[in-house]
Image 1 (cartoon, rainbow, N blue to C red):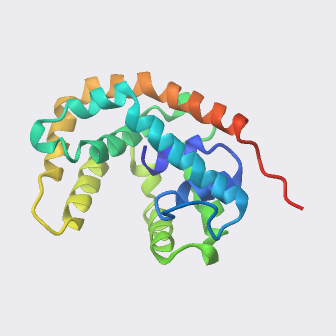
Image 2 (image 1 turned 180 degrees about the horizontal axis):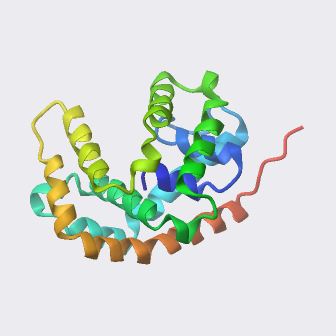
Length: 200
């Protein structure tokens, strides 16, 4: 799951949303330097990643990419699934994607002083370029894969994943539509089993 999915799966609690965002930046054991309920969001993020990585439908999606791309297929699939979430957004949210994106950026930026520098840069870039709203565009998937490919210091074929994404578009979309209700149910159950931490 990539940024859009993690934000959606965090639900409505602000600390879960912030923790879900920080899940890509805070490494190591918890508790961290953050509030206990933000740590709860980080734990949710990590649990969603484990659930996703082990899920047979996700493995099926990754296997649709050629052996040359197999090493990069988990990252490609994360981005592709965010694309399909954006394309089918009305199925999963009462808010428009634009409203949701603006709300998420406001929640994260309200916590900006506590964020690590790389997280600050990312959320400001998301807001400035309205990146969450652009996930429904195939061209955005293309540019995202190119950007990730360019961040790797050695030559790599990650950007070639875009053509294979187009080739397997219908099958990957079907995978997503089967998988997302399951990860949504997992997140809901996790939150019920790990309730908000009351603090004195």
